[in-house]
Image (cartoon, rainbow, N blue to C red; front, side, top):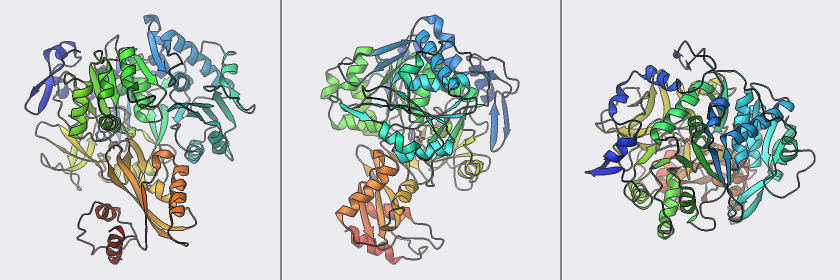
Length: 632
Ligand code: WTA
C-alpha cells in the first residue's frame, strides 16, 4: 500500500506521494471565481450545444448552463466506448455465481435496447419511470435507458415496503415500473413481486417490466425483460435534453409525513457528479471505484452510477450483504478486484469495529488508495478504526457531507490538499459557498454551533424543486433564511474553515445512515385504531447511529406486548424494515406547546436522563413528570 498521509499534531496531511498524483495539490482552487470554476468543469462533459448563460438566479430558483443541450447517457457511455474498457463489475452475493464484467460497448448496447423497449411501451420524454430494483447491473441499465430517452427515473429502495412504493408511484404519476422477481440477501432468496402486486393495485400503473434475477416464474401480466429485450435494437439515438431538463427525481424524507420528490436537472447535476468524483476520490483512467451505497439512495445515484461513469472509470457494485457468508466479504471483494477507491458509511464501519478486525487481517488491501465516508457524522473512534484497519494508517479518509438535495458532495477535504481531521468533514468543495449562521441568518463566530446554509451562487448539483409541490420547496428550504439554502443540519467551523457536523436540527433521523422522517412513522402509528397519538424520537445506537422509539397514547385497549408488536409491524409495513421501532412507551399524555406542537426535544431529553428544566411553555407540564415516572 502506498503511503499517502503524514501526521502533524492531531491532523493528517497528504504526503508528497499523494500530492504527486493528486488532481488538486494546493488550496488556490478555493479562491477561484465560483461560477468560472463550474464552467471550466462543465467543459469536461460532452455538450450537444454549448450554454450561453452559465448561471442565472431568481430565488428561490436558479439555473446552470441555461441554453446548453446535453444527454447524460452519452456522457456516461458513448464517449467512453472506444476506450475498450470495463464500465461495471458486478458481484453477485452467492459465491457460486460468477462476477460479471460489462464493457462500455456492452453497456451501450444494453442501455439502447432497454431504451427502445421503454419507447415501445410509449414512455416519452418527461415521463416518470419508477425503478424498484436491487443491486444488479440492470439497475444501471434502467437509469441510463431513461436518461437516453429523456424519461425521469424515480428509484425506490428495494427494501422499502409495498406502501412506500405505492405512494411514490402515485405521487410520481408513473405508468411504468421496472423491477426484478427478486434477489439474494444474506444467503436467502428475497422475492419482490408480492410487494409489487400490492403496490400497483389501484394505481394507474399497468406496465411492469420484470428482470428475472431468480429462477422463478414471471406472471403473464408482467413483461419478462429477458424475453422482450432480445427483440430490441442495440442502437438508440439519444434525446437532446436541455441542461435544465430533469434527469431524475428521488423521494426523500422531510419533516412531514409525506416523502418529497427531489428534482435534479441534467447539466448541473452531471457537472457536480463528475467533478466531485474526480477530485474527491482522485479518480484516474484505470482506477476502480466501489461505493457501497444502494442506488435506492442519492449516494448510489451519484457515486455508483453517474459520477464514475461520466468520467469513464470502472465501478463495482455488489448485490448482497456485508456479512455474507461472514464479515470478510467486503475485504475479499476489495482484494480480488483490486479496488482503488472505497466509499462507505459510518454505520458499516461501526459494524465491522464490533465484529473485530480478524476478518480484515485475512485479506490484502494494498490496492486501496482513497477511503471515503458519508451519511452521518463519523465519530473519532470509527474514524480511527477505519484509518488504522482499512487504510493501514496510510490513506486519507475523505469524509463527505452532502444531502439528497445537494445531489453530490459539498463539504470534504481534498486528497491532495487536506487536512484530514478525525470527525471533521472539511471545507466546502471548491465552487461552493457554505456558512454557519444563527437564527437571524447572521454568521456565527468560529467554533460556535449554528445552522449550516449554502450561499449564492448555489451549486450546479442542487435540487431544482420538489416534484409537483412548489410550496413545499419554498417552505422547506427557503423560508427561514430567504437568500440562503437551509440544510437543516447543525455545524460549527474551526478557524481554518474546516466544518464539523453535529446532526439534523429538524425531525429527520438517520438510522444506519438511512434518512427517515419521524412524522412518517408517527402517521403509521396514528392510523392504528388503538392509537390516539404518537411521537417518535431517536435514541443513540452504537452501530446504527440512531434508532427510533415511540411514545404512544392509546385511544382504546390496554398496553400489552401483543399491541406493541402490532404497532411495530404497522410502521415496518408503511416504510420498511429500516424503520423498526426499538421500543414503544405507552403514556397518558405527550408534552405539548400551547399551539399543540409535540415537544419531541423533551421526550429525547427524558430518554437520555437529562434534567428537564423549562416546562413553562407546555400546556400540560404534568405530562413530563408522569413520563419520567413511567420510564424509571
Ligand atoms: C447527514 C446522504 C455528517 C446530514 C448523502 C444530511 C452527514 C443528511 C454526512 C442527508 C457527513 C450526510 N457527516 N452528516 N459526512 N453526510 N450527513 O439525504 O444530516 O440521505 O443532512 O443524503 O445526512 O441525508 P441523505
